[in-house]
Amino acid sequence: MATIAEPEPARPEPVAAEPAAAEPVAVARADADAAGAARAGVGPAAAVGELFADWDWEDPEGLEARTDAFTENLARCASIDTVRLEVPHTHGDFQELGVTGIEFAAFRTRHPQGLGTDLVGLHTDHEATRPGRVHRIDGASLFTQLDIGRPLPFADRSVDWVYAEHLIEHVPLGTAVHWLAEVRRILRPGGVLRLTTPDLARYIDGYLDGNEQFFRRHRRRLRTMRVGPPMPERRAFMLNQIFYHFGHRWIYDEAELRHVLDRAGYQEFAIERREFQIGVRPDVADLDTAFRKDESIYLEAVAPGGPH
Image 1 (cartoon, rainbow, N blue to C red):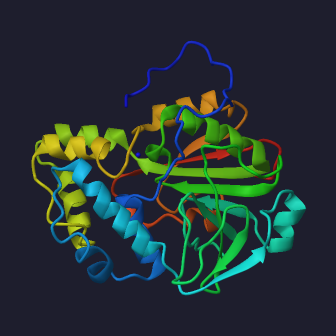
Image 2: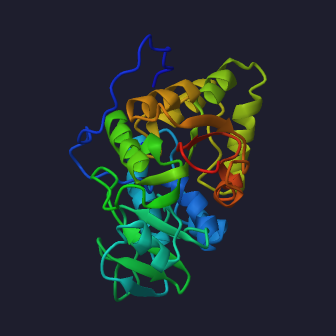
Image 3: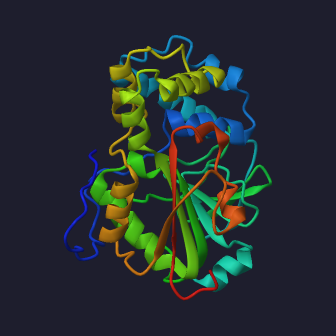
């Protein structure tokens, strides 16, 4: 929350229209939350095991209430301080905040000069974040609450980097194109977009592999994180779950990622496939979490006109 795209004979015109989804886009789902628990310092046994004790992998609809409860737990924090009554708009505004880039789908970004953002807000027992403001969470990371299904409230060429780990698969294809076009607009010359998402090709290869090496590693990873009971070991289940669990809406391989970037107007960008925590900006690539390493594809798009 797919198909393997065939190469197109001609590039379509960039699309920056309103998103296809009418409803707000919520991206904090089970796979995002488990990694978020590690970022937030929430122990897997306490944060995951208790809430998911009777998790039923074969009931995707029934899992939604449990993942919502887990998101609620992750969204709880000790303190919320308002540091700005409106979001930064220009590059100068970001500089005044000490921010160089934005991490989407992040309650608590680990980048020391990053601004975390998500549709879901954070809260204490007595207060909550509010859209349109910048908050400091637990005296550390900066956060603003916004919906990627709407135009981003930032000026053209205002940030140096954008990072999104396992976000794009949670939204419809049209919304992804709209959001990517907005990201292209706000990146400065030489700015970097780093995308990570589950790699459909790995899942297809895993299904075709008689030894099921990838599926075995993936089940072991979730078992180590104590995300529910062990996954069923059927290959068909392992392939289906990436489409129907966690609020996923569209699953990508490299060709499909390049397709949506092309539709969003990235023809002049340098687009490269990367490896885990390797990229043109080490500070941004370091945001990759090992929790997702086994299943992810990493792609970077670098805007023209900069030193990179």
